[in-house]
Image (tube, rainbow, N blue to C red; front, side, top):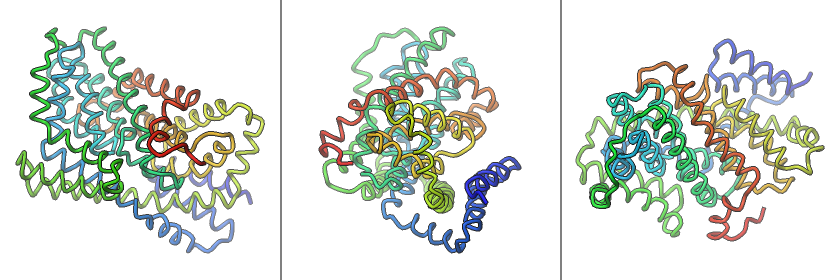
Length: 431
């Protein structure tokens, strides 16, 4: 019996009848284990080894820190700074949304959390100024996906665990692409806003209000400085940085801004528990799925399939990007990274592609999955806040995909602009 084909058939069929994706992946894995006549204990053993790495504690810590920061008033101060910086231009609140998401992404590490934290404030403000709901939601959803690129990033942490690559090196590699992506999103937002005459009061930029907003929001700005500065200064590891972020968020929310309440803390803990519970379930199942992929020699088959293209690594990466975007319409980013890293990483490294570069490439391609139906999480979050349909948000987000496509192409054809920071800090990669 053809194990991989049956696994694929089970996965697709169960998903088509409405089985949640983690359970569909689990059933496909059980089918593969049964066909290979392997004891089902492999599933439990794989889950245990998936949960064992200590850096995995980083994810719930950063999610909890982001949730506490949102409730504790930090997001409001970040929006105030962004408003003083770009709020006077056409599409001002849209630009504010993108800049605020870039700031908050460096706090939460989560795309959906960034969309919810910033969108809950800026989407109602855009609707009040007669922005189309479709545009307001689309800008927020697209900018919220920056939470998966600008460090600390939960998806980069997952990739680092699966590929056994340095998480600090991945964080550094994500800074320039994340900032470039944010600037391109601002450009698209401005052009659409100018065409539709959205917002902008024409007031000239002034340093005094901006410096005042920065001073008032210094505690919010201090969070990414503390987190990333501590990591790269060698003061603490990424896992320890996540714990520091939680305590910093609690201190600022309770003592400095005094907006954080006990129900807010309970809500943040509940939100974190629900999110990490789903992440762990997906991680455990897809770890076994990934082992079966290796057992069935699927990476070797993929290498043979792409063998004729070995002289053109750019073409291989382009085909992988198209696959990621297509699969991302149905598969969530975490299982996508876990499954396909096991399949494609050996192939691309054999073609001379740096695994750090491939990690950034993978996360950017998976970010598009946040913005494509039917599984696009950011679309659902933005749709709920804006009270418009997911279909409308999906249409509105189409122009916002252009920056993502441009960044993917830049990653395929050029690598030094991504790798120079980690290489400068840690030396050339020794892959």
